[in-house]
Image 1: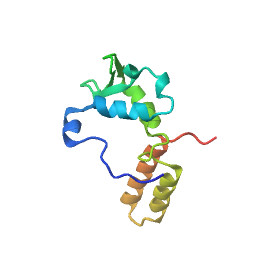
Image 2: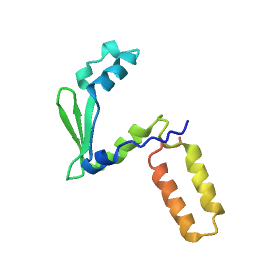
Image 3: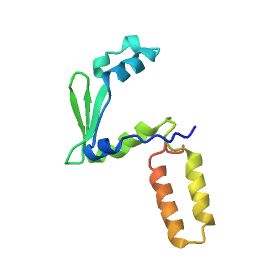
Amino acid sequence: MPNTHVPALTSDQWEARDYRQSARDLDVWATSQPEAHEDDTTEYVAKLGLNSAGMVVAMNRAHDRVLIPPPARAPLAALALADQPFGFTATDLGQLEDAARRSDDRQAAAALRDLAQRIQNLLPLKP
């Protein structure tokens, strides 16, 4: 999985807790997809945000709004990261665990193990 070093949101978007995809960018993406002709493009997400109650707000181009409550945010994050170049892999997890084992600094090792556990919670379960 290649590394990407592009922030997911700008500082302004983080401050507002609001992301709006430009209609032009969404249209360009949609027409580049092999199955795009089968989709109703008004169903594509055009806005994502976070409200004061901690719910993710998703709105499509037709202005239908879906609220994703906090208990569903971890599954949403896991699904959003799956198979993405900016997501996490079992290799990433293994590297963190190795670094924790090699660390002579107990506090740093504990922090690395905690980070590894949080990442593991976002990865598919091993069969």
